[in-house]
Each structure stands twice: as C-alpha cells, then as structure tokens.
Image 1 (cartoon, rainbow, N blue to C red):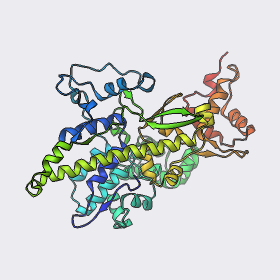
Image 2: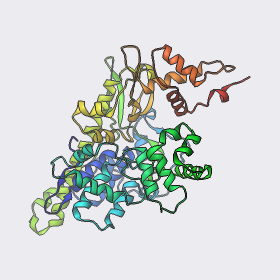
Image 3: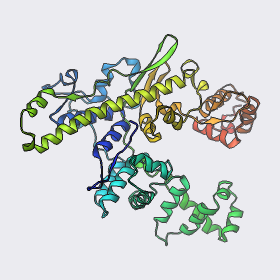
Length: 459
C-alpha cells in the first residue's frame, strides 16, 4: 500500500472513505481484522466468507474468533496470554466481544460534533489516522502532509489548522511531535489560576536540562521562586500524562495469533502468511450476477454496496500483501537473529524498510503494529526487530536490542556478593567496543526490569 490516503478535495472536499478503510484494516491486529471482516460480510450482501468459514451457519453457537483461529493452527503458533480465562461457549460470538472505544473513535466522535468547515473536517479526519496510538504525530509536518495528500492539493496551513482543531479535543496534549510539546500542551490547557502552571511552563520551555539534573538550587535561582512554589510546579509536571492517547488503548486479546510463520528452507529463514488467517473474503458471485440483470439506476444503494464490496476485497488483499512484504524484509534482514537470538539483532529502523519497499514510513509503522510472526524462538512481535544503531569500535554495527541482551547477560553472570554497578557495566561494554553513556545503561537495565546493584547484592 504505497499510497496511504488519497485526498479527494473536490466539490465535497472530503477524504475518500475507501482510503481510510484501507488504513484501518492495515492497522488492525489479526483478531480485530477477523472481526471487521465478519462484520463487513454481515452488512454487505455482495460479500461472503470462504466456505470453510460459513460452514457453521445454522448452528446455535459460534466459537469466538480467537478460539477458532487457535484451533486451526498448530499449538506452537497460538499463544495464550497469562491470566486469560476460558471462553464462555454459552454466549454468541459478538456478545462476547466488549464494546470498546479507542482513541480514534473518541476523536472522530468529537470531530463530528465540532463546528468546522468540510475541508477542516476532512484534513482532521486524515490526521486522526496518521496519529499514533499515544496521540503523537511522530513525523515532520511535511511528512504528515505527504502521507495524507499524495496529490498535492493541501498546504501546510491546512495541516496546521487541522492540528489546532484536534488540540482542542480531549484528551489534552494531542498532535505533539515531542514529549516536551505534549506536556506543554497539557499545561496550556489548564486554567491560568492552577497553582504551579506558570513556573511549570517556564521549566519545560527553558530549564528542562536543569530539572533533569535535579539541580533544584539552580532552578530556584533561575526562576526566582520559593522552594514551595518550585515543588508545586514539579508536582504538577509529574501529574501530566506523557502518552495521552494510551488511556484509550483497547484491551489486548486473550490470544496472540501470528500473521506470519517463519520457517527454514535450504538454510535460509523465510516468511509466509499464516494460512489460518489468509482466507479473507470474496464477492458473492451469485448476487453479483443477479444484480447485473437489474437496472442499476433503480438501485443506487445496491450499486454503492457493490462498489464497497469490491474495494473491501481489494483492501484485504492489499493488507496481506503489505504485511508479507514487510515481514519478508524483516526476516531477510535479521537472518542471524533466528540462529543466535537478540545478540545478533542488527540495527533497523522504519525508514530503512520504507525506502527499500517504496512505502511511506507510516505505512510500515501500521504494518508492524500489533503484528506477530511465529518462529522457532517463539511468537515475536514485528516491532521487536526494530532497534537503533549504537556506536562501536568495530566495523560491525550494533543494535540497541543486542546491547540490552548483552547487559542482561553480564548481570546474569555477575557475582551476587559483588554485583556490577551501571558504571561497571558501562566500562565493560566500552572494553568490548560499545560506547554508550551510563544513563543509557541504566535505562536499558530498567527496560529489562532488573533492579540496581544495591538491590541485587546478596550476602
């Protein structure tokens, strides 16, 4: 899917709903995609599921999508998450799926109720699709504009107006391009009378580095404020939400069903689509032929449904094609991982995949979000394979994920009576040709959920 969103800003000045549908389908996890396909088949008479999926018609009970898919693929490729309960077979399939409102649904509801022009609503609707699940716009404004307007019919001013509109919505802090901007937006949304607001804004705008050093004496001097006022401002900053969109995250499915299966063939690991999820849907040719014998002008609604059905089928095929292309690139790039694990992970970023496959970076992001591949090393999320490059003395580059694995190994083999401090680990990595700061070691150790040396010391 090289074109993410086609802006049809014509007489109606609206975004093509077909493009928005394609984006939503690509973003969905396997189980949510399965549900979306079933809903489409129910609502559109020109769509039908393959025979093996409609074989249960007429039965009183239908297994939920997660359970059905888990039975169709080998046990090693279906993974139940800890704490998930057994499915309740006494309820119908859709009754078992809780009503959920994600961030984008929440924003669309506010957009519909807003008083803005059709053009502003059109661009804002596109931005909602480009925004990530935390509420950020990770790309530059120029990249965002390219993602939603491949035909060059919009200006940066149109984009900025839409961003301003969305920033007035709940939750505050949306459409930021950095953490500091996100926090500032939240502070600015507060009433001026809120205690600590003005000082907190000044800290984030001018003195963030001093706050990070926890040099409160210098901070009070620079701000010319009392200790009480400074503490009030810092407490206010701590109450802000660094990921405002995350509160709308939908509940993770009880089962992980991989989109791709990785197998070894002739000494190389290759990716293929999981056959249990590959079926998709097709046009109901019987209904299509019956409709062709009618006068279409007398049935405009059905004509539109047929067009939507054809687009749905194409969008599904695009989704499978995009996921397989991205997965194949990842597997080929990370061949060593399947032999040696995280230590062999090579640096890789979305831009590298985007450039190689000729896709927009946000397309790659959607194709890797909530997607999994079944491998001999377990069910691995696509995102696990992406890690930035770190500085080394050698010719071979080193990924952040490999360094985290190395840190875990160093701690795992340390003396329990004299555990390695983060400074020790930094020195050991430097001796191996890997140059990272001590604070980076601390961050990676915390990501591994390993306590500090003081808490690891025994005896």
